[in-house]
Image 1 (cartoon, rainbow, N blue to C red):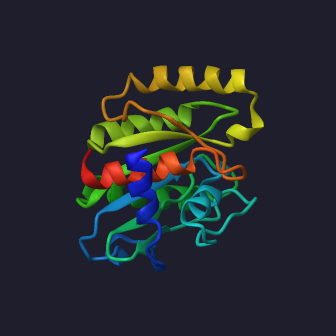
Image 2: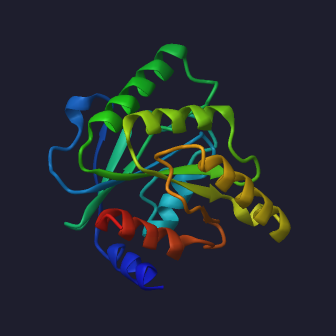
Image 3: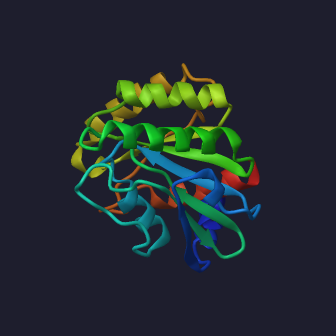
Length: 206
């Protein structure tokens, strides 16, 4: 509960869009600590970010691959929240997908102030191969990441417990995966305080 309270305080800061970057030279040069959000297209990333901040800062879309750059948001003078391009979409041209993938890889391998990646997984579908590929890449880059299950309100309680168990088991096979999973629903507010607390822990190195 203490971490949740501290986390809630973080999001009382003013939220401002800093910039979108489609090349590394556009990454912000300040040294504020960062937490990043990644996930398959249509996993509900924008909705979750908006639920966290209480403001419609991230554009939600039904069109896969709409976020084509890395978007940086500054929360006061405390930290920056990073919205990464969705992966696993099929409608974007191959050249664009490759370009975004290279951008993401460069960010993850070179951003020293990155404290943790929150990897969003649709609770209805669980870990897919494309998620496993991202997890392997994060392991190799030595980037700490934590799995967040989204859209949990679409499942019954027994189904929620089942997917939590399967996902936790899958995460244990990855060296950089944080050993706690948070079940969330942007629509119902489920898990939002816990996720805010996890962000506080990540920023503090706990």
